[in-house]
Length: 398
Ligand code: DCT
Ligand code: MG
Image (cartoon, rainbow, N blue to C red; front, side, top):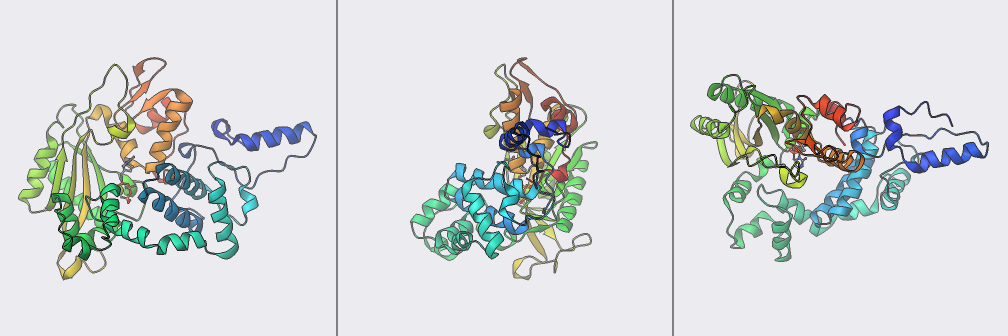
């Protein structure tokens, strides 16, 4: 069996089905026919550019994933996300279902949808989903900043399907949700690269004025090379450990004094290393000093969005911004965690546990066999600890 064309690192995660088929063919003396596509099982073993060569398929699977997530069906959502991620990583357009034989992450349901799309150009299931009242209402309601799936579901079962119905329902909204309703149109208009750059200039100016020497890094989708996003994510640190403590409060005070904030909610850093190993991944995302905010982005010099105005012809628009402060010793882990994509992060943590018996969070990497934390000062070192080939941020769009 000649598998010299599989790199060593890929072989580990290759779909067993393909390898088994080849072994069998070889034993029978059959010539080994090269598969149309090769792809490793875990998204963190693959290079996944944005937007990829199969946008018709990935957009459709994304709708089904979103619909499942909005129904609170995480398992089903994850299955569609994995299919979507796999297809986005393929290096050319899929012509027929047969080319996908043996590839991982593609369940029967995803394959049926893909077949529909390849044969008819549309998937009836996806079209029905998009036009279903439930999907439309849940998308609208969870599109309100501060409203999660649970709240949206409760409101939907009470017959609330629009902002107008929410307003007349008599529900009292918390501060985040009030801001979410107030800036609904702006916050549901994608943030452009130019707007993200303008926000970067604002954040850097404020951070450097309150703590000279602090470093500001653009994370999230924009670091992965996306041209638009739903928010702008920043990671802030200082080369002297400890100098970053309490920084979020100073940043917020300065932003407020300059009239740049429309809304903010901050949390303290509650992360502590423990003898039991790194914190649980699901709870570790929000343990840093962090600020969920809405910025007031004014129509001046550096800001070149469509017409430079928010909804209602205002000379500014509202933009969601997440600020996260990390101690320098955890920075590489925070950067890896906050660069995403969500699926890429999830897969990296799954790889760590299942293939290396390590637990990875946005704070640390813990080796369960050696019972110790593994230090890293760059993302490259973390990939090396995990035995993964380095994937650059622009390849993490799974
Ligand atoms: N993240 C994660 N798990 C979560 C939430 C976030 O791993 N539950 C990470 C991955 C991406 C990063 O934080 C920023 O989150 P988002 O802004 O939600 O994602 P994004 O990729 O930046 O998407 P968008 O471009 O729409 O902002
Ligand atoms: Mg983001």
